[in-house]
Every structure is written in C-alpha cells, then in structure tokens.
Image 1 (cartoon, rainbow, N blue to C red):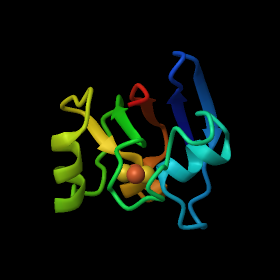
Image 2: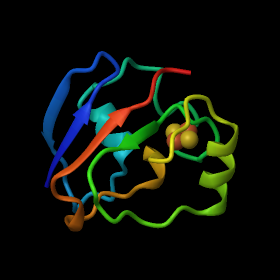
Image 3: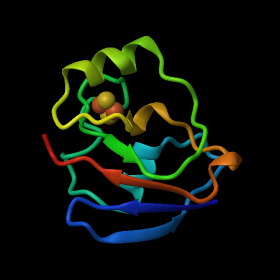
Amino acid sequence: IKITIIDRDGVSHEIDAPTDMAMNLMEVVRSYELAPEGTIGVCGGMAMCASCQCYVLSNHELPEMQDDEEAMLSEAFDVKDNSRLGCQIQIAPEMNGLKIELAPES
Ligand code: FES
C-alpha cells in the first residue's frame, strides 16, 4: 500500500509499505530511514517512549487506541488531537493512501 510520510524536515515521501510483514508504522519509518537512527522507536515499540509519535493527516479509520498508547500520549510533548504512536499501528490493507507527519523529536 502507499503511505505518505512527512518527515521532521517537512519533506513528503510516498512509500510502499508491505501489508504481509506484520510491520507497524514506526518500523516502516525506520526501514525507509525517514528519521535519524536513535530518534524513533527508542523503546522498541512498547508504547513507552513516544519517539514514534505521528500526526494522522488523512481520514483513515485506524485501530483504536489501547490504554498504554493513551497513557503514553497523555505524557508526551507536542501531542495533538490527531496524535498516534506509530509503533501501535500495524500496517493493514485498508490504510492505503494514509498520510502522516512525524511529530518533532522529543
Ligand atoms: Fe516507543 Fe512507539 S516506539 S512508543
């Protein structure tokens, strides 16, 4: 599926994300090196660091937030109404066309 990711410099990237590899958004950003090593995915995808925070810009219906994601976002910086933790969003076919922006490094 195609996903548009705006990096922390404001540059937009349209990338191909695999739906058959059980990858989450944070891992996709890392695999395309859209954020410097060590600035995203710090906790390894455990919803414990918020380094993978992103803003959802398109109207896609995404998996509902679980308690740990909600708790982490309640403590994170630069949180907006459309904030999600990328590591908690598994790539799925219905996300084709998804557009996200990486939150500033915190
Ligand atoms: Fe740490 Fe997502 S990688 S919260």
